[in-house]
Every structure is written in C-alpha cells, then in structure tokens.
Image 1 (spheres, rainbow, N blue to C red):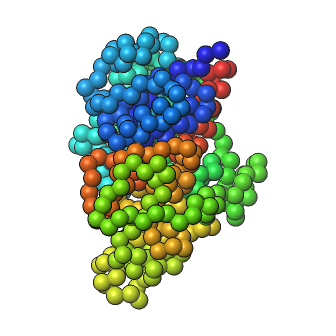
Image 2 (image 1 turned 90 degrees about the vertical axis):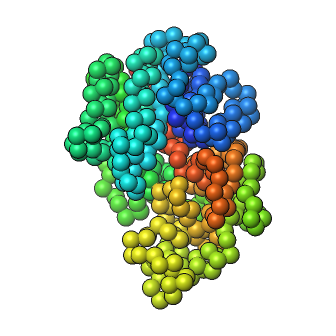
Image 3 (image 1 turned 90 degrees about the horizontal axis):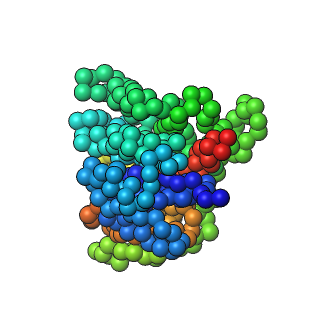
Length: 368
C-alpha cells in the first residue's frame, strides 16, 4: 500500500519532518523561507533518495494551487498538513507583539493551505504563549480563539494540548502547544506520556524516568575548536566548539546545573552585570537532569567542560539521528551571520521523537 501523503509548512531544519516520515508518511513537499534551513532539507532529502520538493520562498507569496500542481496532489488527497509557524510573536520570552509582529500573521497561512487542500488532519506546533496572545482589540487569548474559529469554519474539529518533551523521553524541559484538527468530533486522542520525574509515582501506568543530558551526549568525545575569528560552514559532524576564551573563564566559575548570575561571590567583570533574572545566560547543564528548553539567543554550557554545547550536542538533546546533517554556519559567539546558524536551526525545530509519536497517533487515527 502507498504511504499517506503529507505537506510540511514552515519546515525549518526538518525536525518535525523527520518524525512524520518515521511514523510512515510520505512528505511530498516542504515550504521554508530560510536559505540555510533549505540547504539542510535538500541535503538530507538527497542522502535518503527521497523525492520531496523544497519550496524556498516566503509562504505568503506562494499559492496552494502552485504547490498542488508541482506535487501533483488534488484536493481531498492529502492525509496530513503540518507545520510550526515562527513563534517569536507569541513567545513568553520575547516582546509578545502578537499580531503587531508580521510573523504572528503567518499562523493563519496554515488555514489558507488547509482550505485549499482539505487534508484529513492538520497538525500545528506553537509556543504555549499563543494561548494567551492578545488580538488587535487587546483580548487575551483572542488570537488563538480566532485560529480555532477559522479551523471550525473550514470544517475541522480542533483539539489541543501543551506537551512537555521530557514526558516522551526527550532530555529537554521544552513545553509546546500542539493542535490536531480532524473532521471527526471525538475520535482523536493525544498520546499518554511515557516518562516522568523519578520522584513522581502517581501515574496509573508505570513510566520510565526522564532521560538526562549526560545519557545522550557522553559518547560524543571532544569537539574540534573553532578557528578564532572564523565562522565554520557545512561541517558534516557539526561537533564544533565555538567558545571564546573569556567565556571559558566565566563558566569555569559555575557549578554543574547552575548559572553565572547566581555566583554572587564573583566580581562584576566576570558576572557581566547580570541580574538575578538572568537564569539562562551562562547556564551550565547538569548530567543527571533534562536540559532547559534550547533557545535561539543563548547557547548552554557543557555539564563538566568549560565550553558551549556544540550543534551536534544540541541535536542529540533534541533527538535528531546522528546521520542527519545540518548545513549553514556554526556561528562565532561574537559574530553574526545571515539567517539561521546551526544552533538556531535545532532550537527552532520540533524534537523528531515527539513529532514521530504524535504522527504515529495520527496515522492510527486515520487507519481506524
């Protein structure tokens, strides 16, 4: 039997796509604006001898009719439409500009494509800040309410849940909102968690303890050091140390599992005038705990070595397979690059194992 067909919107580095494919879907096309992320997608599509077409463009300038023609997909023939639109407009860690940020409007591109293709299921990933984001009238939760209403007007019944990645074996305390919209009113159920903290034993069914950072990165060995003043491009293994010497001096003062601002005994020259609220800056991971949510603006430190985590270590923490290649720059911590560097490609993406679990549940729903 042929595989159910899917289209990926806002594909990024392909984290969600990996999980969807692992669950048994065939991804016919990916739509992504960032050039480095598109290079990552094409590299891995070629490695796997897949026929997926990558549309490198602003989705607002792309018509669903054009996509349908290129992919030879007709209405009602698409099983899954999925994606994670840019989240900066709704992130609780950002300015929360909501619809005043043009990126916030990209959320509704999911609706535009859904109305044309009329897929059997829609899967959306977003930050949980979307639940409380204000609309243009200042109504709290207004943006999400509008999104749900438009899904219903298009003939779908949406269900949603905030999911913690660590609850499904990913060594990361990453919370994200997932929306699954179907034509059926009651038959889809989100999967139950498979992991829990060691000290929590109230679940009806026993679960495994959380996976920790040390478990997934301990066998990677020493990374290569970045050549001073250079940005590294297209290293296949992505295991590159980008730590400036001054930052090594700072993090050397931080105990495992702590952060620089908490080290009140240090001088301001080492603490960089950090405030008590700066709990994620110069943060050292702990080997026996899941990582904090990987973020774009900051890179966390290795649990016991005085350096930043490498992109490959980020990939391990996120659940990417080792054969997966990132393309684009590994940015110097004191430099800038155009578009998404490798650390940010990972931090922006959905953990592949979580995408696989959700997609497998969707596939079972479709089979039933």
